[in-house]
Length: 383
Image (tube, rainbow, N blue to C red; front, top):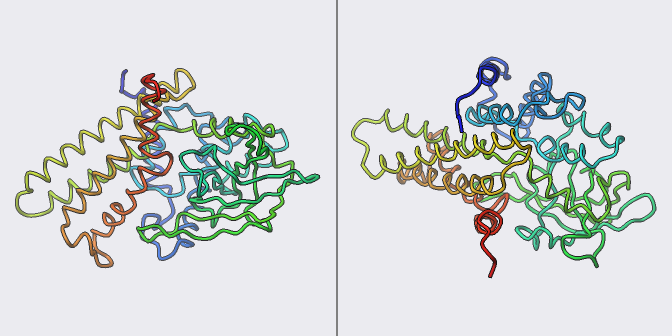
């Protein structure tokens, strides 16, 4: 593969960098006192991106995007993640919108897509349950048809940003007697509907990103069913296939390595060999992960499909690399990294270390990733 960018790709990359340097609201990269303050800035950034049709960059122009190629999307995500620009990870853009384009009615496309692309509506994903995480098809949340509505009962968990989402992308069981991967349907759910309760889950890093969501006789209009009833598993699978290059994880890891190298250079005295060697290993890992991400995007560009084996490899390798980098960062700061006072440079790495535990769990555990690589990627038989 030729990793050199075309003139057009370099020009687009330069345009993105210029926007980051000059087009973002003042103070966008500061520490925010509250989630509400951060959300206000994120919404501002989303509106600025939407004005350039960059929020839904790969979407067709008629739906508010620019019809960008996978490589353009990857270059955009790479720069945004490297510079830490918030408000660019958007579930509505990443998988809700693409699935609605494929399986939604014309009324649903008109109703949902424009408001996603222009940054008006934020979406959360209502998939995982206390007994259905890696084995997602084991979900038990029920949706029962009642006239012009479906009545929803059940519990979802690990719902990222469900506490400020306008809409939820819900997978629920509509036929309890069907085989596990059948009898599931997907719905667009207004998160402020009666019968929906969102409760916070504060993670070990002390931040509130996740939530439990309870459905107690919540009514969802039948017109919000997306795709065919009982065929929602295909919608879920297709949605998970979008944007799988892992370039965001790559860029985050690269930025952390770059910052740690700069920090070590600032210090007086010689950096101990164990730290120097780990940093060298991390730099190698970042380059491997970046090459994987570029390969995945190039294959998507050629075939329109993300290569499953490489996508799983990138997710697995990237999640574990981020954990290793975070552990090295904390070691660099020593005991001060474990009890960093407010305002300390070590706070960022303390958070990174604690938050990295989830990297190998969310979006598919490392064990599941290895199983998929072994079976679907290498063709090895199951036990």
